[in-house]
Amino acid sequence: MQSAVSKKAFIETYGCQMNISDTELMHGILAEEGYTAADRPEDADVILVNTCAIREHAEQRVRGRVGQLQQYRKGRPDLVIGITGCMAQRLGDELLGQVGGIDLVMGPDSYRNVPKALRNLRAPAPSALPILDSRPSTTPSSRGLTVLDFDPHENYEGIAPRRTSDVSAWVPIQRGCNYQCTYCIVPYVRGDEKNRDPDQILAEVRNLAASGVPEVTLLGQTVNSYRSGDWDFPTLLQAVARVDGIRRVRFTSPHPNDFTPDLVRVMGDEINVCKQLHLPVQSGHNRTLRRMLRRYTVEAYLEKIESVRAAIPEIALSTDVIVAFPGETDEEFEATLDLMRRVRFDDAFLYRYSLREGTPATRLPADQFIPDEVAQARLERLIDLHRKIQLEINRAQVGGIAEVLVERSARRGGLQGRTDGNKVVVFEGPSELIGTFVEVRLSSTTGATFTGELLSGADQRVA
Image 1 (cartoon, rainbow, N blue to C red):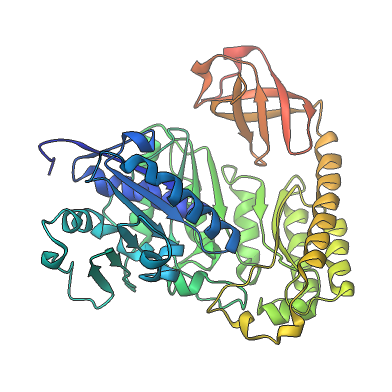
Image 2: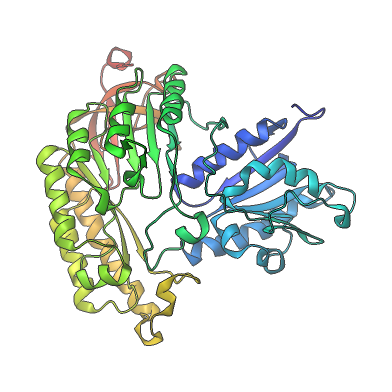
């Protein structure tokens, strides 16, 4: 029901694609209560910072940002500033004491309660605040309101997200994670794996296609472990790829354990499944993988890479790597470098190990933790190697012609889009091409992105 006076909400997002999708979801929930989306925090009646808890650095950025946002309270006593997402779930009510100026702390399973929480916060006096429901994890106080529900069935079915793009859409198919990697906080802040009904997923994709969105990305913490009744992930991926109007389908992030021959077959057979794969490896040494509780070996991982390259020679590969996991030796780090040289990933997301309280890795002996200077030196070597390989791969593609889905205007002028292999391309062209497929000659590369030349303008529109 629309409110008499429309209010505005600004949500700032940190972290992974699931957080981006959750921000769209919260905007959709707030829209049902009459809130519109503000483009700037200074224009908002509600400011939410949607957070990540994977690394300490991300949490520190949030703390600093919340401090900056306090400037908008001047002369506005009703302004609400809240922290949502994984950091909120991890720290809960502690945040109200640790970070000044927070009115609301809300975890990922609680977003249906955002409007109710805002009404509670605007009640006349803190002592009169009604508890949102009977769950003991909902805590009103004089300092603010904390809502931390773990709901084993919450998949946010029936809520229409407010999409931020008319070109490409995130489609969550799974929330939570059943893997218990020793370094990872995700199972503790998002709970166990919860898979959506396939009919609901396909209905959402059909609606997106009907609205003109040509690309979808299926999301899950371990997306390829999806199962619902007789449906497994390859079955779902194939069905999504065959929805009329959908031209490109991506998925992230899969787990190597669940990367099956059936999935390789679907990726190879379905023309609308992008020839791109993000497959996190984390380490190139079996001892480290065992201690991370990754449940596969380097050899098994490489076999999967070889199988997908045999089926799809043009596949573009990306990965995640953590260096300086407690106890990682120089030899084990060198093995990771060797794996990078062998696989030659098109892209990689590279991190130093970040200690997360509550995860099993924190219980490892203190003398196994890698000194900061050693960890940083390893990360820099890994980044340098990856950038060299990436530059070599992309230089080899210069001069070729690629089909590009035009996503938006580029920051420094022109247009920006992506190839089937998820390569970013910037080129000159009219804004009317946004949302269409065009052919672009790749003219140069910085290593990470390409500059291109639009071929024959509008005559090359594919959609």
